[in-house]
Each structure stands twice: as C-alpha cells, then as structure tokens.
Image (cartoon, rainbow, N blue to C red; front, side, top):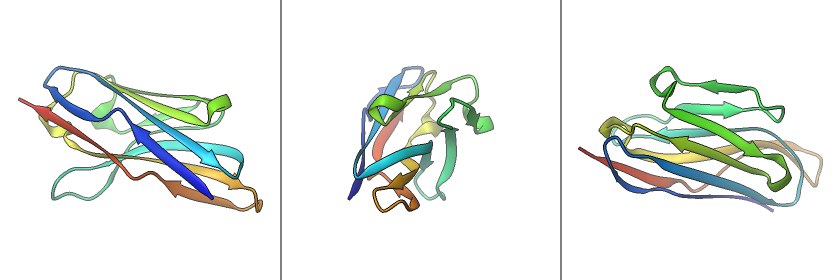
Length: 120
C-alpha cells in the first residue's frame, strides 16, 4: 500500500503565501518524479509544477516566479511554496508521485487533495 498525504492548504488573502506538503509512505522502493496539480472550480485539472528525483523542475507559465517546488528525498516528501497568491489560484491542489512500489512496479499515485482558497 502506498499513500500520499497533502497538508498546508487553507484560506489566505490575495498577496499572501502558503506552503503545501505531500508525504509519500508505504511500500515504496524509490520515488521518481513528484508533482503538483490543481483543479479550479469548473475547470479541468492542470499541471502546476514537477520535480525529478535529481531536482530538475518544471512549472506552468501561470505560476512561474511565484511558486517553488522542492523535495526531500530522504522523507519522500514534496513541497510547494506558493507566494503572491491571486484569487485565480483558488483550487484543490493534488500531489502525485511516479514511484516504484515493493512489487517493483512503477506506478503513479495521487493524494486526496488540499483546498487553497484565496480571497480578494
């Protein structure tokens, strides 16, 4: 069993900051790329940022310069520092992880999501 658990969401005023965390646990051999996605009300889920095991990052244009993704490989945890928040950043944020489980199968797992609400 593998679980991804997000934390750190909440209600924040425009211009504020939050730090999201996502920890992977369970029968894990190796965690490869980790990422954050979001789904705003009435919209499809979209990529926010990804980070490889080696630390190479990729960001959606809409968040470049405001969001920073990082990870702690020893803790199988990925973080998303979000700053200069805008009302349009309001969404449920999901983390995912491409990892090898104890059955030596590479699969993608998703967290349950954490709500970020930005008030104007």
